[in-house]
Image 1 (cartoon, rainbow, N blue to C red):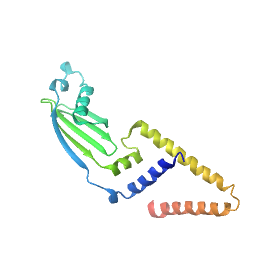
Image 2: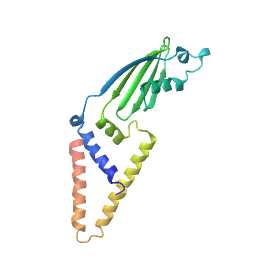
Image 3: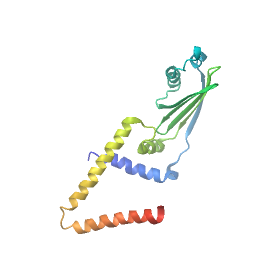
Image 4: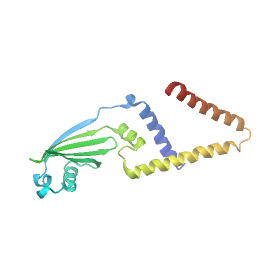
Length: 178
């Protein structure tokens, strides 16, 4: 029972991932503009640009909670990207004027759960949830396999069903996939 909800989650998202055209919605895209003090973008004496105040300004101005996935400093502009499950935001900041344009995309609930299923842009804590749930699923599967050996009346049928199911999966892979 400990793994029931996570097993259900991965079963449902397996369907949503396998049939994405059934569930695709249009992403909600928003565009924002703003300014950041040019002094923060062009430190004196060729020092490196301090990321923290720039990222903090974008987060506070636009309510961004996703992790920063990229911070690029070029001669004329700075690019900052944020990624999260079902979410992306990209800001391009002009280093001379401090003006920026940001595009934010929210892909919806199905995209969020699909990204969580894959562990995409979901962080270390969610990665541990995936590992723990995989271990629980392995434990449940092995427990079921071991239990069949104690059900003598069902042993032959159980092993036959196991063999047939495995053979079907291998045959589909060999003849229809690879």
